[in-house]
Each structure stands twice: as structure tokens, then as C-alpha cells.
Image 1 (cartoon, rainbow, N blue to C red):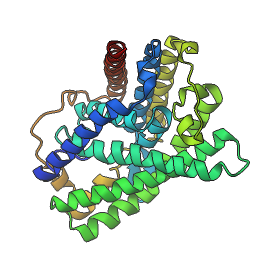
Image 2 (image 1 turned 90 degrees about the vertical axis):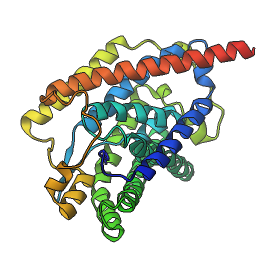
Image 3 (image 1 turned 180 degrees about the horizontal axis):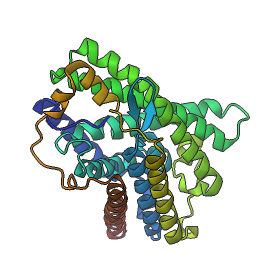
Image 4 (image 1 turned 90 degrees about the horizontal axis):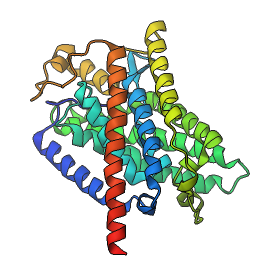
Length: 330
């Protein structure tokens, strides 16, 4: 669902950039007290690893019946782990790294963040909260409740984001609205199945091995839960282990052919209506910095490394700024 430069009307681009910037500024102030605690630095490696996971799963596409492909968006997944406001900032940074490789435009970054970060993250998260509250009336285990709710929230949010994306491209004149919306929603009804399954499995895994990483439990359970950051250990080994697993997953997927190079849902809609040459002729005002990398393996390694460094650095600055402000106020 990565929108390319040259596709959207300038007015749409500007409006969505303004909304995204405003939401990220608001998100900084609403991310919670956990970033003001003395030992909150220990969260930074976990956030870096999470960025690597989201980049890797956005980097590779799984095949979808009908000649298209899908990939994890991850907005709802990140929101369930770190909260809805942090998810917008994280998705913005991951999508920025994606744009350096030509996957999504730099001017369209505001629109992509709006669709995948705000709709996928904030809206998806509160769908999850709603589902969890319903499931709390059942005897289902807590981790299964969160996993099921994450699957449902992820699915609904990606379909809703595709609906919004259809409106954006139709207003911009790329495809008539009576074609854009049904086509986008149809493909993402299929693509969303993969989003739901992957997100649920990751949440279930985290609940089994390190449930304290999920910061939103108090919102879902409506109970005051103290997060003891002091017991976190800096997961240096885990960072290398997760990175190695991601690279092996990508390398194995390309080698045995289970990963797809077919167009994603948005590209499929544009190609079906306007032709492949029309899509290739979209004019971008800039050349992606890493477009010279032709190796999928090289791009995966560099993208994961850049994602970890950028995300860790950004949240290091955020955490230290919030802690400094907290000390000054005291």
C-alpha cells in the first residue's frame, strides 16, 4: 500500500503531511510516563529490534491469489506493543527508510504514514481494545484474547486503510472513485488475512516469552499495572539473534521462491486500470538514495541496520528529552 511520488494531488499531500506532523507532535506528549522514568533507556534496544521486524516484514511480500501480493503493515501490531501514539512515530520512521529504497515516495510519506500509521496504528489499536473488552467476559486465556483481538484489529484497519487510500488516489485523478475503492478493498480483504495472522502470531510469541514488553495491558484490562523497567536486561544477544533470523527468513524466502515479486494491492489496481507503463512513468522529484542496490539480500541487510540505528537514535533523543523535562519540572 506504499503510495509512490507523482500519484497524489499536491493538496492531498500537503493536508496529510500537516495531519501526520500534528499527530506525531501530539503523540510525543501522549506516549506515557514510561519514557520519563530514570531507567527507561532500557526500552531503546527493544524498540530497535521491533523496527527491524517491521522493516523486514514490510520488505518481503507473500503471494496472494489473483496475481498480487501483500506484506505486513504492522501499525496495529506496534500499537499493541508500545501504544498507539508511539506507533505513528515508529511507522513514520520505518516508512522513511522504505522510501530510501524506492518503496513508497518521499513526498507521499505523509499519506503513507496517515494510512498505515494513523489508521493502521491508532484506529487499529482501539479496535483491539474494544475486542479485548468483549473477550474479557469469556474464559479465554489473556494471551489468546490479545492475539485474537490483534488479528481482528489488524484485519479491519488494513481494509479501512485501503478504503482511505482508494479515496486519496481517486481524488487525485488516478482512477475513478467507483473503481478505486471497490478494487482496493477487494484486494486488501485478501491481503489482510496475512496481516492478521502474522500480527497475532508475533503478539502471541511475545506474550509467551516476554509479556512485559507489551506496554498497553493497563489500557486493555482497565487496571493500573506498574511496568517494572528496571528488570529489563539490555538484549544485545537478542538483537543479533532476531536480526539473524530475519535475514535467514528473507534469504530462505527468496531462495526457495515462497516470497512474491508480484505487484502489491495498490500497484495491482493501478496496473489493471492504467497499465504497467503508466505506473512506471510516474514522475518523482528525487532519486531514492539506495536505489543503486540491486541485490535483495544487500537491501535487506542495509535496511534492517538503518532501521535499528534510526529508531534507536530517535527514541534515545525522545526518552532523554522527556526525562530532562521531567527533572526540570521537579
